[in-house]
Length: 90
Length: 90
Image (cartoon, rainbow over all chains, first blue to last red; front, top):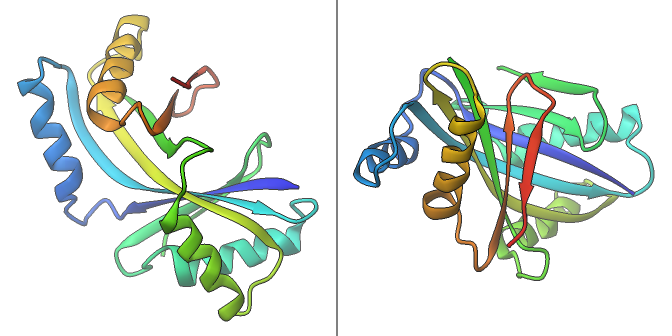
């Protein structure tokens, strides 16, 4: 069994009100030195068997159709414990 | 400027209805071979200057107090582009 991680973040040009809210709260809590905060989603998928090319191609399709909205979000896929990764910017 | 990533996931023993919903939708969309899905949050913090020990200690405090609920969530911190990382399980 392998764990594949899909990170979904808003595209840089899309406003991120959640991240802004966190960023705005930091000085109030006494934390300085943070220039920007962006908030996104992280999905951990446990897949059957090894993380083969085919399996990862399927995860790419899942990320594209179910886990992200390609109009406003980018996703990145990586196998946990491995170095190979794929980034997708539509 | 450095980018520090904070991944916040529900503890393994905490039910994850969002992940369950995604997992349940997969077969309906024709995707098989996924055993489990967990959904969490990913925060990207742009920090001033280098990611020094002190800065990372501050990010740990931010993750603990603002970005996660230590009762039900674990967080992991890593500097993007670097190999060093810190995992925190309360």
